[in-house]
Length: 282
Image 1 (cartoon, rainbow, N blue to C red):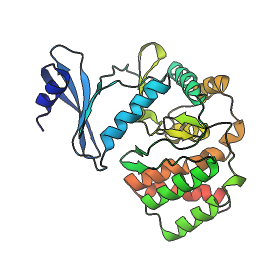
Image 2 (image 1 turned 180 degrees about the vertical axis):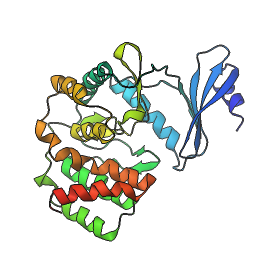
Image 3 (image 1 turned 90 degrees about the vertical axis):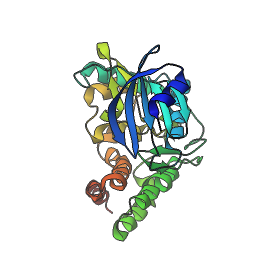
Image 4 (image 1 turned 60 degrees about the horizontal axis):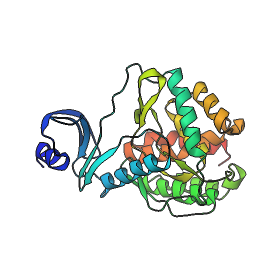
């Protein structure tokens, strides 16, 4: 693919410079500086997962349409090519002010109600297919379509899969149904949070959306210490949640992203899964 010519054809502006940003899942990510338009971010190449970029485009557009979360604007999508708005970021990482802002806007997004869990279509997390069948019961959805599905994708050892099956059969002893299904970003860790000026979040990127329990999103933000007390204080002021979430449920919900990481990066991520199952008595 002549990426400069492809960008010019798509956007109608000559590509002056391409700068490598990253590589992921078999794709290249570049910043393109244009003659008559602001710079753009371009993902191109054949992903490990067919339809990956089209799905990413769909998810960003849905978040932009249905929530007030800041996300990059999708400018062009075709097979093996996604062009998005370039987001300028501020140096210094995630500050206390950024955490407050994130808590406020994420709480607002979670307050948007749906009458089913899942989504109108399947999505992706990383380079893994993420099933989203419409389901009326959160415990069933989380057990079957998150824990056991992803355990299969991670090819966990037979004994660990058996433990997960037994745990899933008893999930109602550990988690409960939320007041309503909430639209989740689905992959909320520091690498997917772009910080802007004046303590504002510039954008959330690389979503893995579906309607689920907000607690699974809150748990994910702690897995790599993305957010801490300032975030949770701001979130709770706008969408109160039970504080005993931090005792065990947070770790139960983080079984899912640990299984995702095990599938993508290796079996070391199964250690916290086994530890949480042991704490729960399985």
